Length: 323
Image: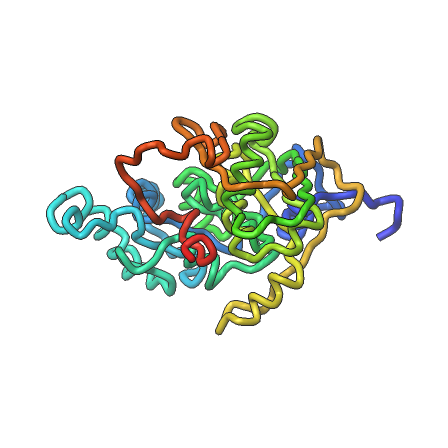
């Protein structure tokens, strides 16, 4: 392509351009409406409850690829509830029934795994397009995928057709500098970001591209946590550029570790804004009720009584946080 046709693109724009069908130029811009090929659709049993109704209205057609729909029962997990609550039992059984009907390769029943953690660790690859019926589908941008949460009806359609339609979002860049102090992880980084920039403000319905030299030293777990909480930030998706750290981590997989696409944003990519955050003096942070951007240093809540504690969730089950 000649230089006259070149336009700089963000990381997200490059992935969408690669997946676009019928694109008549070698670039995409914010505001373009694209028909895109979808690599994966994912859902939990909570979402499938509504998706099944949409699927029935469509006539229960053969789905596009039974090996590329990931379904996990990971919201309805309490054994007592599953044994005694009719609604909970129906939710789980609907997913089991569909998994058998469609002959899904990737179905996980209750108390087997966590939707996003399992999909991230075993299946997603850089450069893919992932659509999920859950806001925390943004997690998979940690490995360099374009991954967004949509309404269940949209996911059902993509599951059946293997494609979807999307408006190319505006993008912001968050540039991190400074080395993380010992013991500080991805949760502290994203809480710092939320505290500094605010939820549902600069990121709202935009791509958030997490950049800067500091990110190159981060594990895939740190990236997962930050991308996951892009949902709380208000972003459509959050994404890191896949690099050597990701490539080395993918090599440890038994399968699903080939075919990755390592896109890079152009140096002059059209971000609507760039925000710089220094992490060199970052300490442990907590978000107080009732908003994830109500962020304070942990020292400010020392001595505060705790009435209950839950350890777990799709953000906080990564090894470095548990260890």
